[in-house]
Length: 400
Image 1 (cartoon, rainbow, N blue to C red):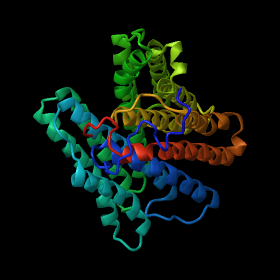
Image 2: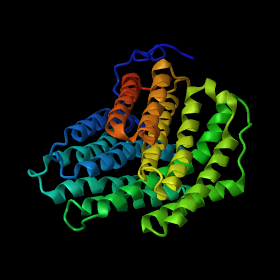
Image 3: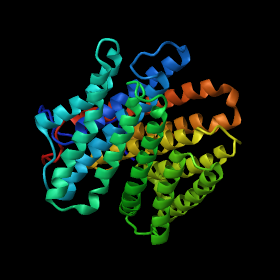
Image 4: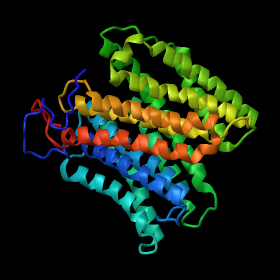
């Protein structure tokens, strides 16, 4: 393992060229990392001080919205803009077009702080515009190249846009309780993306990273894992009989546990870029089990959501950003101790936020603060190491 703090990146040729807008992953991964560092401490401050709302959202809604439609959507945008170019061989936005898209995302994060100065419809409209623009941007090369198998990502983006609209309808005064439903829908959609992409990349990366093809996949399990999660999301959002949700959550946990078992190889623990993906997927299994138990009233019924969002989505996105950034800048797929520490910290955040409240609920506020500290430190390390990588050109001189 490389133990050098790669802020100065010894593998990179010193270059003065500015490459931040050369390919989609660059600005959006950097923005996601910075957002992760800033948004969570701001939320913790608001939570502990119990002060008045500082955006046009309710404070709880703002936290959920910015993590799902701010941080998470930035990672999705960076990944899709990069992957679609690879899949199709056709260019996705770069230069001024990519900068404009990043600026649109950034405006959605900033404008809510000007509540009372800007019209609510303007704040909502700017934020709601990003996902449709992103969908159109990636739809064009996908349709031109007839990559029909990838069109599922357009459906997910459309559903995310609908969930975002549900959130905004509440502060706009059209609905009184749609925001939480929209956030729950967005959480399920984000997890669904992890399930779809995880099934493609985790066994592939595991076999390639260990130079062996020992990971196993069973077609029936693959189908049932995805279908059970889809059905669970539908039943949960429809608020059907709790026992049905609990049974389906338990079944989904079993399917995803078997799926993860098939991918697992003991040698992954020598490769941080692999174990972070496996551990992140394990948090999905934990979240599904907690959901089943929460329905029965034995535990806090909302802990499962943070297993999904902090453990699964947070860990998977951090791991994928690290890997994609190295691969697409021509670097060796090896992380040093700072990113290994970041991977540990993100899992400590999940343990603190999800597991410790099961044993000591009276210190719930303390666990929230500590989880926020671990999360922030993890992404500070990411930004410190990867800002230079994302800003400077590829080390091999190739475009992108």
